[in-house]
Image (tube, rainbow, N blue to C red; front, side):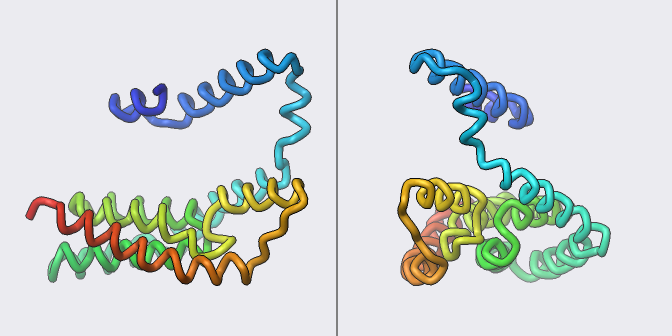
Length: 188
């Protein structure tokens, strides 16, 4: 509810997310009669350098002019067709998410779409690509990496190949249907 309200009020989500996480963890720990060390020892601390590295990657790519080049491509595409640009943006972001993870892919695509003053249909397509695209491979999403780590701790192993085989079957149709629905329902 806090995140929905913050979103509706156009408040940056970082602090409300952190606050909601702390409150939720506190309620769970108190209701179970456990101390904070229980939660702290189960945090996947090795993921923090990964997340920090992803933000460094985005800054490095911005410094090389990549975002400027993407903005130029987006401008060119938008001059031809906003709808085709939206399709291209959604599919590109979905695929790139699997190469560099959806966090930096989303940051890069969001920055480029904002800088290009892209229409809402392009922003929607980027969001769909960032959300659905990472389901292709293990490396596509930080959430997937965290869940696979949790599964391994419980004795379950899902390998890259197994995940990819299922991802190839599930992700492309879901992506095409979601993009098609969003673009079909978008006002012209």
